[in-house]
Image (cartoon, rainbow, N blue to C red):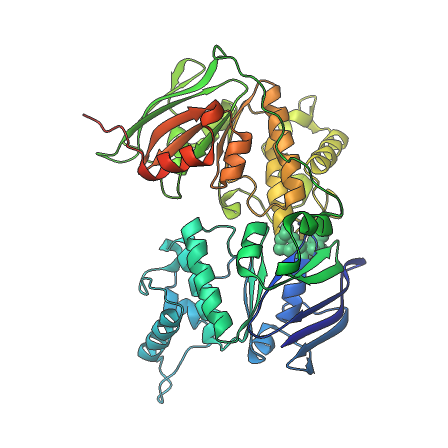
Length: 500
Ligand SMILES: Nc1ncnc2c1ncn2[C@@H]1O[C@H](COP(=O)(O)OP(=O)(O)OP(=O)(O)O)[C@@H](O)[C@H]1O
Ligand SMILES: [Mg+2]
């Protein structure tokens, strides 16, 4: 159905795709695999007319095609759900789906009823129900995802590209998405699926194409391969045990953060936890269980009904995260868009923001050389793949932008870091390096709170784990108790401590 041959792409003098082939059949889910910056998103932008290839051919149903823009690709039956969504937050689902291609009545007026009916019909086909009248910004990420898919289908897409759709979904939402994908596959749609979660590839995909550094590596049937082989194809080497060893942390280690009483909502449960020096404290639990809100409440960024906090033994109340930062507590929010990255700035500028104190020379000057050297070090630490420290952030692949966020924070003078889903969108190879850096950070006597939905990560990295359920902590486990059975049991059946 879709056939790419010898696709090359250069940005200025730099070639990022060096002749890639890809054949996708109707009724199959085809995985596109590769490390951060391998060229997956770029290739899919070429398929959908957003970028033009420097060389190579695109065939749809055997016919050679060239797309000047996305609209022409849509005409040919191609739909794409981007890694970063393109929905307009203040419009509702129907308005978003028909944006720029509104249905009109015979009198030329907007036919809102027809659009609504069509939207409903498509959502029904997907077996998805969601509110059609509220601004899309108020829907969950999963719901927005389904609106994106519905939008593509409303344009009669027969080739559907999903660029890391599961990165921001909960396990049950992923299941729902897979159900939708299976249904579409049955209807003969060709789906290209990008994900860094290999277990998802094995669950949903039929065939796999692997890219490495802009090169085509291989295409194979899912049934004929396994995780180790895939990783080797992607990374070019084997990756052993990705979690660094856990150090022994003395029970007497000083408590840096002592959260005595947090209550997120009136009549909600009360939680308390302590963060010790040198430890990684995991926050586990289902999405919506209160992990992020608890961290935000501590920093004054969530209106909790109660939050009693001691920082190094002193009772403290933060009005906003900037105050927390002044006391050495940094927060990496969950969504990349909220992380304060400025995509039109360079990597160097993004890493240095809030960080100039480090490079100050005398009273007035910034030591530019030191700043540049530090940025280069930081980039090397997390293996940012980019032209150099001056590359604009919007020329980086999604995963590499995430690495810049991490580099920025590890480079910052903090004592406590709160990571919310730190490795989202990060490839298998770079994950191991980020884990090692987190351990290096704690080995210097700093501490980390790590909020994560990835159980292997929680288990592999945490010294202790607070398990959340229904807005509060139901259990704190350590040692051998940090295993998936115990954590999942607490997360799904645990009892919260209610206020008398
Ligand atoms: N507009 C641009 N200008 C310059 N270079 C770019 C531009 N867009 C992408 N690149 C480069 O092309 C390469 C491939 O990026 P791409 O976004 O396709 O990677 P990816 O495989 O999707 O990675 P990820 O898993 O992180 O999303 C990267 O090195 C990136 O920096
Ligand atoms: Mg990408």
